[in-house]
Image (cartoon, rainbow, N blue to C red):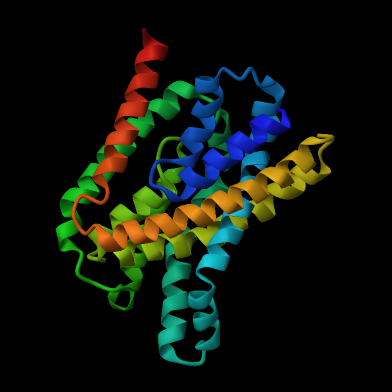
Length: 270
């Protein structure tokens, strides 16, 4: 992968990671749509660690953007309210962490399959459409969420282990189902992203560092920086979008996923 390809890839990843459109699917589809002939060995052995390095930039951007919330949680751990919010995040993080640890190796082989990614991107669009239909239930703030409800949101977040499903889209939709308002569901989804992405980085980045990948390590680091900048801009836009659009906020993303996935699937099967 050239430096230019890595930067383009990083910008797309930084945007699609936080928008509910599946960053993994975009990671799979970008080389296909742009006609990149990437090394099969890279796709099989180094693609996932490279993407996780980009995710590290995204997680850092989230940590900076929501620094007030994280500092507030850490500063109020002695109070029941602070401990409760932290426990909600822990409950929402556990399912993806456990399932990712158990099944990541089994799922790795489909991370470069364009047809699978396109198909599940369509399914993701349907999930977002369903989320928009049930968003009227959303009247709660995060403080009103139960631990069991946070666990269900975490289970939905685990759908992102399959290319095509959006982590943020699934968790935001589950937040609607659990009764959270648009902005509260989006905020909780973004808070959940930080520990799960950092956790994936802890597991995968050492593999990239220790492997004999030459300049790919430095290319990945530059890509992580670009992804972080794109992610910071994306979360700024997304939080304002959900705050100002209480109706049909998910619909544009649902239509986009269905159209992109359907177009690619048609081209692959025709």
